[in-house]
Length: 426
Image (tube, rainbow, N blue to C red; front, side):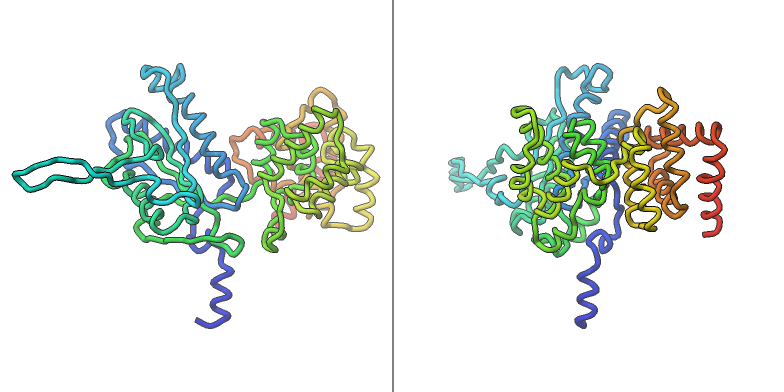
């Protein structure tokens, strides 16, 4: 293979090489949970369908292991709750058994041990039975998810055993309980990660492979639901492009990611609860270890001075931020205007603020959208269009659109019609 061909092959992303779906973490969670429910219901109705082994691939810190815990928690309620199909089985839970491949060896799962049989007729005095560890589910009446974290960082002997679990749902001769499902989790096989892949054609065939895309909307929905510190939420709403710092990751530096923003939120809450204030000088020393120095500087600058246009101010205090937007328009700063539009769409779809209690709020939305260039407003439309049509966020934005179409001629002439025309021209 030539050097150019080798370089080109190295640049092909793992998900491109596997030719698989790239989905948000919330869609992957829903897909796996629904498939488990579909399987259990099919069995309950006499259809013996095969169960599926799932393989989740995605960047570090994006929430892959977290969704497996959420799946098990939600399935516990849906299966064994008051309206669940297995409620008559009494209080049960959908277990989550997670093993970390990089810190385990094959003998952590299974060991042979001698037993005396003393059979003189066959001249056999000893045999071997297998001793299975607590990592192996044994209760045949139980339900659960067996999660193999960082499968491709385990050694080869361990991977061979884990392949049997993923392909046959058993270890040696011990079959897993029927109601246990298997998920393996990996980072992509890219240059940023130290991997030891054991790619087996049969294993690839038997798994359902899903690649996680980094998605600020998913992160913010989770952050708002989990009560992350407002400064983290507002910063990512304003700068969704800073959720995952791929550039720093490629350089081998500390890099911002969803997990490190979660930790940042915890540090802010701890400091605020005990001291009743945020010590930014201390944060400037602490946060680089989570985000790196450059991202920390951006975050601290945002938190201290609010120099950036906060998307929530467009909605609540448009007059206050309009001069800054006018300046960007005067400079024809399309890059900043694009970031602002994406940030506003992110704020609206993750927060979904109430708008029918004060007519000024819709006027603020109208004023902002109608003053922006059509190329920039197209970003707003593309952000909304990416949502599932049944999602609350999509319905919320459609409701706002319908109200503005009905009540404002300006909205139709300066926002809607130019977008339609631009679409027809392209």
